[in-house]
Image (cartoon, rainbow, N blue to C red; front, side, top):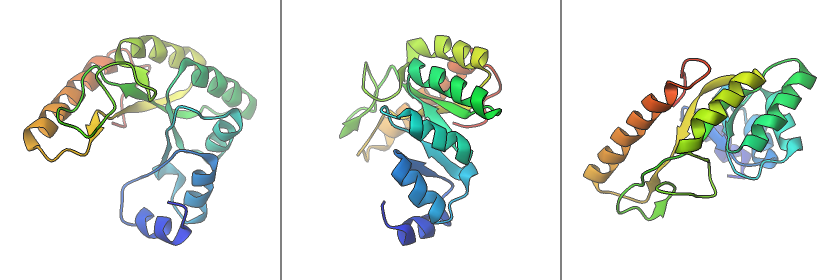
Amino acid sequence: NPMPAVVGLMAGLVDGIDVASAGELKVALDAGAHPAEISFAGPGKQTVELRQAVAAGILINVESFREVTELAKISHETGGPARVAVRVNPDFELKSSGMKMGGGPKQFGVDAEQVPELLAEIGRAGLAFEGFHLFAGSQNLKPEAIVEAQCKSYGLALRLARSAPSPVRFL
């Protein structure tokens, strides 16, 4: 939301703010959201945006091997590791969902089968791994489908955690 007053109000009511651009990051910070409670997702993050996110100390949801390379370089230049989570494109989808983000290759996140290799790269790069961002779909009011997706998400997170460079603190 581009309105600082709305973002400031929401920041006090929710347990986190998700941004998808440097402009949204600026609005969130200016509205008083705490950097520890902000995460940055989106497949098209530019180098300048990644630099701003690292400087602000927010959690960056990594969505490609390119971002790991960029963040390793930025972390080396700034002297501190970037905080990262991996945005996973799950190998399942939320059944009867109006908006699906899993169940096969999508533009958001890293396909689940590639995540162990990405986690190894994050470890080699010395980034501050914190966890996973999983999203299978939305616009669904069927409790059984939501429960099934949550159970599958938890199982996937447990499997992927075995390859993590450090303990999972964020899911």
